[in-house]
Image (cartoon, rainbow over all chains, first blue to last red; front, top):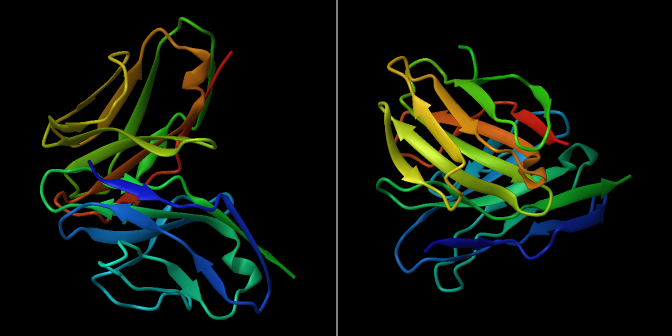
Length: 109
Length: 112
């Protein structure tokens, strides 16, 4: 079965510092990986997906199949980045989107 | 384009009661998924419906059930409520066959 692991429940960084939220997955095939974000009092929303290879709000994530990781990175954290971040995995076909338990990012001014 | 709408937003029940939550997906979306969100467990998948058929089911007891109507609106029901059922229940819709989900604001259930 697919599994997503986010080892950090809470990550605190200072404004302007680099950010890396870790995500590891277990699946032997070729999954699609996503990062979802939930800002305070807002609904959960898609931040980025690995197949798009985009940078959204300064965040990037690279799929490393060898390490089965999909870490989310940003070179300079901003206060508005404070939120709950969920890594998620999807396998093509009739399967549900599987989420990690999430990492709360707190950016300190 | 209206987003995913969930009702009610908040509700309080007592142990043993039952509850029904409703979800209206984005127009044109045929897939509706339900998740339970708690601080300790994160997002846990409950079930997914596509064109009125349950396509996937998570590892929850039979007290949790759902259905989807011909207009893609979905309901989930929890019977014989337990204290541990207190959570935020999220509904998400999509066209189906994708990991890109659009979430509602959730229904926050408190069981006393």
